Image (tube, rainbow over the protein chains, first blue to last red):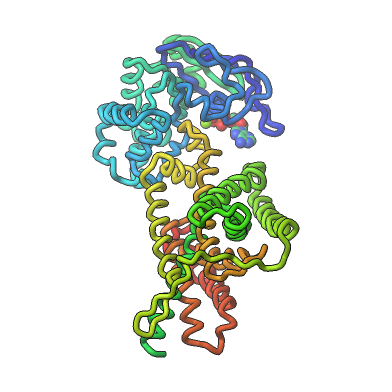
Length: 234
Length: 295
Ligand SMILES: Nc1ncnc2c1ncn2[C@@H]1O[C@H](COP(=O)(O)OP(=O)(O)O)[C@@H](O)[C@H]1O
Ligand SMILES: [Mg+2]
């Protein structure tokens, strides 16, 4: 469904991605893990067109999207929950959700709201509230729910568990599995390697801008290099 | 001062303030999105006034066609201004934008000077805007009544767009976070263009009413009202639309009351407006309705 080939990205003189290739198959949860600064968010930004790679290409649903503008890429059926949530604090919860369905009809937006409220009932109680007044965990739910509003084919989640209490993390991961079962393909970017690999069909491990390991979630969880580097085992 | 005179001045102040309010909205909307003081904004009054005048003179259009056309044309020029002077600088430091704005302002004024000439032209005020109503001792030109009414209608329409429509939601989102707005699949350039269209059209409406109120128009006629409206926008809290409207009315009242209460200093009314700006910047830089800036 999505294929990235040999991506090279530079920030000024910094070679941030050194030839990354990955693929996301329809219906899967694919996890991208790696330490802080490994280049995970840069991969995210390349896919959505916020950063143009010096070389390499991204294909989505059979078409190349590498050089398209961000809004065109999103309109093709990718939705995102960016790192740091980036909800619109000056808008209400409901308005944030409606923006997630900006390119959909009014009826589609309404049914989207019902769907995300069924996944995150807590947002329904808060719908008239300014999004900036939500707790961190609720803001994360909102960012996630906002991404679902367009009923995307593919959702990119950049560190959805960052800074959340353990219970909240569980809830977010439960929601990821639920929407995946309902047919949405997911790219999950995480530092929380155990959680991310446990629910992933396939995973990639990133280190300083390159894929150093890949395999099914199970394989990676068992891999001793992963266990050493990310699970703190000796 | 007699009660009649006071009421007369109050009405004049509200009327003048409504013209400031319409211009101030454009400053505040563009600032809200681009964090730019669009110094070329005031010149759009001049553009609108000439467009309205030439529509009537050259094409013999009745005012009710010429004025709306002039407003649309000015809105389009506002979009062009963004495309030519600001869009290429989206990633540039803000000081570059500011310099570009000042350059665009000089360009518009001098282009008008070359094309039209510096001699002030008489603006043909349609007859229906020339009546004066006399109630008791009050002499009220109908225009003085129409300006606040037109302003009120336009502001209500604008608030509807900004707070109730999909595009308005996108504008408010963009004022908070460009990148996140684009990540919603929103074409940011269209939202910015809409912002310039709305702000410029309102300035155009103000410019035409200004030209009817002071019916001698020249290439620099937008400079002073533009600066005053900028003061109004800061007074109300720049970035806040309701604040801009409030600031416009307050500045209008402030100016007229200075003239009324201190007639000896009437010639210094512009200086008082700038003193007010300095006062606001010193004691309440966020204005009446502005939130504290977080940067
Ligand atoms: N805008 C930027 N300008 C310069 N360097 C950047 C920028 N964004 C990221 N980097 C650098 O690129 C590398 C990868 O960053 P990032 O993709 O954010 O990693 P991750 O998301 O895995 O933490 C880091 O070394 C980071 O410092
Ligand atoms: Mg990151």
